Structure formats: C-alpha cells, structure tokens
Length: 216
Image 1 (spheres, rainbow, N blue to C red):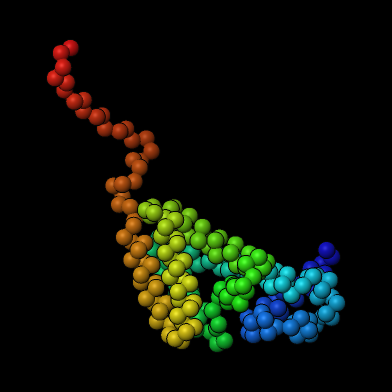
Image 2: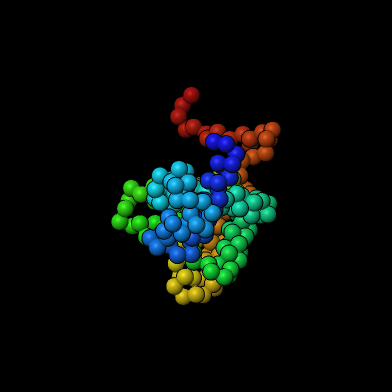
C-alpha cells in the first residue's frame, strides 16, 4: 500500500478509537467516523470492509501501543517483580485519573459484543489480554517467583477488577488496594536466595554414603 494510503488508514484507525471509546461501538456510526477522519465513507470501506473489521483493527493497534507502554514502564523496576507491579498499578491510576476515562476499551467492547463470541473484536481482545498475562508470567518467572503463571492470572484478576469497580464507584482507591494485594502476592512467592542454583563453576558438596549393614 502506498505511503499516503497507509497514512489514511492510520488516521481512520486513530479517529475510530476516539469515537468508539467515547460513545461505544453500537452507537458509533461509520458516517461519523468518516467525517471525523476527513475521508469519504467509500474511502473508509476501501480500507475496512465493515465496522466490525474496523473495530478489530482499532483493538489490534491498541494492543501494540499498550504492550509498548507496559514494557517501557517495566524497565523502571530493574527486574524487581514487586516493584514492577507497583509501577503498573501507579500508571493505571494515572490513566484512570484522566478526564473522560471509561475503562479498558478491550473489556468494554467485549461486553458490548457478549452475544457474538465469534466477533473479530472479541478475538482481538482475547489476544491482548492473553498476551499481557503471558508477559506477566514470563516476568515473574525471570524474577524467581514460584507459580509464576498462576500469579499472573491473579494479577490479571486484580487489574480487571479495578477496571470494573473504579467505573462503578468512581473510587480510584481500589487501584491502591489492588496494588498492595499484588505486591503481597509477589513477595510471598519470591524464592529465597538459598533456593537458587549454585554459582557457575562451584563444585557440589559430596554426598555422604550411608553405611550398609549387609555383609560385604
């Protein structure tokens, strides 16, 4: 696709994200998205054959942006898993404090499309949430955390719970509670240094042979 076409496609995706996030998928019209993006409806349909496909493309684009941000935030933890989850929840709270915040676009769109399990947007949301959970599990494993995959599932539950409860109550202190809980879980599963493998090059201690009472 020519560069101009790629720029047009990206402008449509960026605009559609704003429209979908503000008003929801069902209420957003293709006409409104095209007008806001400064393109004709025919041009929009040249790039996306349906509103469903456009939403899926929006979520795939958000997936890449969100993972990039998460990786950047995690670098500030210097490999400390407890510090990492603290930073993630701090950034979550900053995001939730912005005017017009309405929670996760992945979760909201899935709820709107709950009766359409095969919808491409639901598949995009599934890929995103699974990727974040797998990334957390990998980070925990690298940080010598026992049961890293199960812990990643628990942290994901805390994150999703925050999305719902902060929206319902308008109370961002739920994020502080979730952060403290996640840090407690991480710290409780941290392997002690003595449980780590011996340094490279160190010889293992010889095992004492048990004396046999049987005749030689």
